[in-house]
Image (cartoon, rainbow, N blue to C red; front, side, top):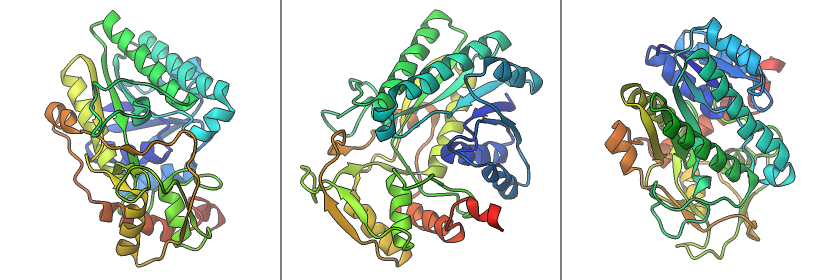
Length: 342
């Protein structure tokens, strides 16, 4: 179990989880095609931990290469992050999302079967709950998807449930994340979107830095306390530690684990903007614009099952998230591209 294949390990969540794995004495073998990530993140993981992780450049749809990697490094388990993740883009390119996220996951599972590996932590999403009828959101709520990205996560969840039913030896965790935010406190790794950010965190940080003129707040007339959408923001390091807790749980227990990873507290977009101002002293100009078609009013987790089963709980505050995100932004105004120019 001391060697874990981390697909998508150069990405935002994957790189922070790789740091937590190394600090826990577990060796991550990072497998990534770098389509939405940067090789510099791998170097920074080494700077933070003092141990450079093994990196293999490859696509999750390349079954031969995955099998070769699993065999070469004597992999004991897999944490699977690799996937396309932009809701808007998924509406424009649905086939790419199904090919990468669903077919790619099937390639990983088939390779695991051939190599005799039956321990898997899967990166799912709160997106599988669609527009929840009530909050906080529990794991037994009905699932639905309003876009190909969410549908791809739903399909993989169902595939994993079928595998678990068909073979009792499999140990599978399906982790439904809410809204990752923040960066490693060192400021060395963080969220590095290509182009204009689609996620709120980097958008707010780039407005605060003066790189973008203003934050567009989509919808000011939701039935929430200030009219803007409410979400469950979770510190990226809390999320990373949730993966270690899930991995430890399934190492000791076969079967299927399905849990929410969130804080259990919802903050509105404007409350997040205020928290960012308070934590950093930087102004974040914003303008309220029309709602986006697929957006929902309110979503935050009931994380009690994760705590009960794995003893994991989010401990970092919204202020911590904002301060750490801003440190990353200040130290890396152009993301990882700074290092290339230096």
